[in-house]
Image 1 (cartoon, rainbow, N blue to C red):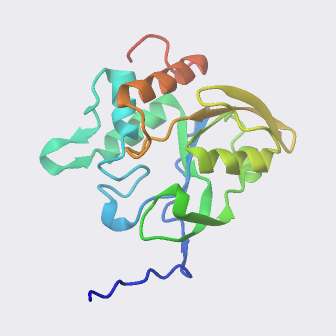
Image 2 (cartoon, rainbow, N blue to C red):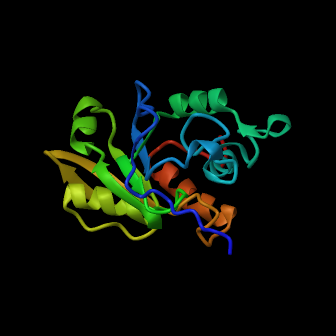
Length: 205
């Protein structure tokens, strides 16, 4: 009988990257935690080549789902992504600073957050940020718990406060392909949010 290797769930894994926060950051997007390095196509947020976050962004801002994809190298264009984020004032980080993987994957369902984001400190250090966007149920729950507010309905926004800092809190669909929604439908949720926050004036930019 083939022996099944048990996964070591006792390992606490720190977040591999610092937050990406442009000087003009207006909006903070928060996921949960990166996948394991063997899933990375780049050493930056949403690195898995089958995660659709950067395809969603390509559709919204350039009408091209492969705008940030380098086909010949089978990876996302990290420099192009960072330039885009800096131009738009979009910051990125995650809600898990330290996690324990309960299975050998990056599924939110099997991630235990050992140390959550210090959202209060981040907002204090970056006063230009006035909106927080979460992608996925677990990230949404973390922010709702920190702010002591009701989690917004998918695609909706609620006003929250952390240490006297008011911010708009949006919940967006996960960009994981495990989430049962087409890329086009996911992009429509994000498109409306970016339009509401003044980052998208016309249909495509």
